[in-house]
Length: 294
Image (tube, rainbow, N blue to C red; front, top):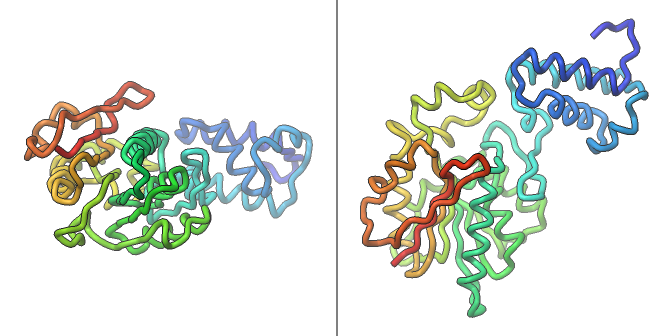
């Protein structure tokens, strides 16, 4: 960007989109708009009525720094500090995975199952295992009042983010609580849930090397990779869930399409479960598994 030229909003967007495209961004125009609207402190839609305006030097300086970091691979969500998920805004930072549209399918299924289970009027007990930013836990609690949600993560830093997101969405302590723990290993033997939800680590080390730089170099590896083959943590989750789900309850988890052919092997005690139900994402890939406890 030449300091001697007039950099209007429209010109900044055009130049930046071209620059980010050359840097490898798959959504360069969207990235430019999100970053500039954040620097200006406005909604993205407002940029379209401000194409001829010249932002202040302070705004341009903040924008330049974010564009530089984006070109180096840093995800837009981390640069602006938030991500939209299930029609709501969630704080994110490098301590947590960035919520993705595929995971919204899990929330939809969970809400459908919750409504059916709560037809009798009872309050449901729901746990979100590996909550990260709290996107799943908060979305379910926000859209289904007859439940208490427990949000679990092995990372204290991730739990801090999830707590702030619960506060952002006005969820009181009696609606959602936070526990540091490894999967369900913290549960007392008699603790039972109606729904167990999870987006666990399911990427194999080999897959990890092929992920986009913005994921591989910036998002927490702990929340992504399950050594040695991507399925280890899912096996543990299924085995533990069988002990802590009420009969007729559901385990709903996200997994890699690469594991779809091995799903039968991951369910080590098939007699505990009814036939798995698979939900595909918008790309047609197997993405969500729903298991009903027998």
